[in-house]
Length: 206
Image 1: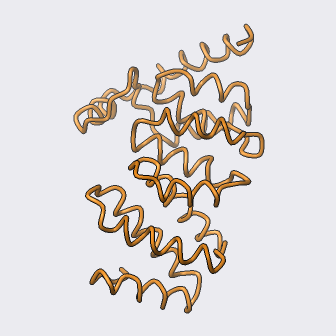
Image 2: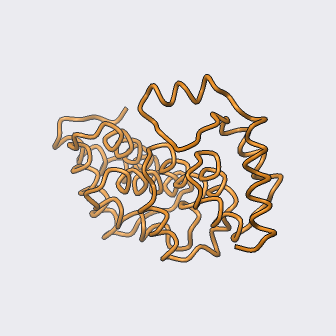
Image 3: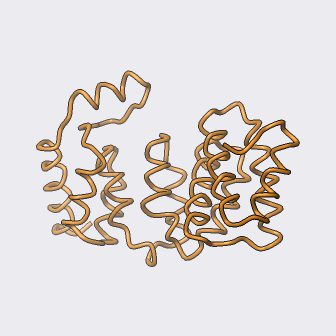
């Protein structure tokens, strides 16, 4: 890491003191969300910080390496999606240990990757909760952006969604259902397919 990047990381970490919200940080700890360091800064505050910094690959890489909640979230906000390599995505996913970071990474970064659909389907079929969570969140965003899957993708998505809706994990079930809802909003044919699939589990679209 160059001295310049090192200094910027240090400066950013110090700036989090001004954004500190002890009550939020304590609330997260009470819910079992543990970070080595958590200033409790709000997401809108971090977005402002990200806009101030701009997209920066090297800085994002170094921020992610720190075990600080705000640094990891900020890294997902300033990483240029078009420059992120497949290997780096895999490393970041392996190092993701909380629902919040998984969701922030999916919304801020992973949905914009050139290979987002491929990763989403791969993670959705994983047996790991946070991977599945990211996979469904990515597809939710792609569906919201009117990206329609091909026939093979439709079958795979519905199969994985039905399996996830029977998962013991509440966060996976919720993410899967949200994704099915967005899928159904792509058009009447999609809505009929979603309703038919859910019917097999005695579930209905909200």
